Length: 278
Ligand code: FE
Ligand code: FE
Ligand code: ZN
Image 1: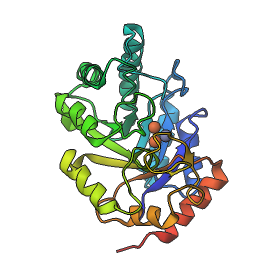
Image 2 (image 1 turned 45 degrees about the vertical axis):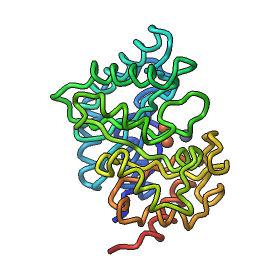
Image 3 (image 1 turned 90 degrees about the vertical axis):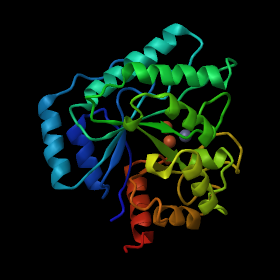
């Protein structure tokens, strides 16, 4: 069965997210750990988490993917901003222990004129400071579109970060279809080649989740503007090939398309119908 869901608002707590997921026939979902612009997270409500765990167990909703605030920059030139990113992610990982066995995704960051090498050094240094042997979460680096000085614009940059993390068995990658397309990987005409490349550089075993998005821009545009599945530059057939691909079909897929709940429900149904059970 296809594992598919979408990004959900976390403002009403865990149980509410599970209920929304059930309502739109999602069996996984993504949420922001706190306001996407950063700031304090709501205190964990143990009874809310308990109701969430029983509901998600009953409806086989798993894994869940927590997304770090996208404004964090672990490789900022400003030590205060690097420290803020570190403390926020450290707090997120501690909170994730209330829902163990799930995924936590973050944008590697932007090096802004410091150079890719310096950026990669800061990011891996932060990961080495916050990861702990006893944690039960897999931390994912997201493939980025390469807007400005974003790190993660190609598979090699992510590989370099992974190589420098000591507890790298706790690390994986989340592939965003809009981002890799904008980054110049032709997943429309050369999906097999792109996946072979991913396997050669990073290893497909590291791939733990897919952000399933269309793109408003052309291949290699380095822009990062998501589109609804039927509306962007990536033909729907190419997205259908992605969810059915033998190397990907077992992974959880997350829609981050411009939609409200009813639109997400339609896209989930669309992809469920296109998924070939084998
Ligand atoms: Fe993201
Ligand atoms: Fe994404
Ligand atoms: Zn994006």
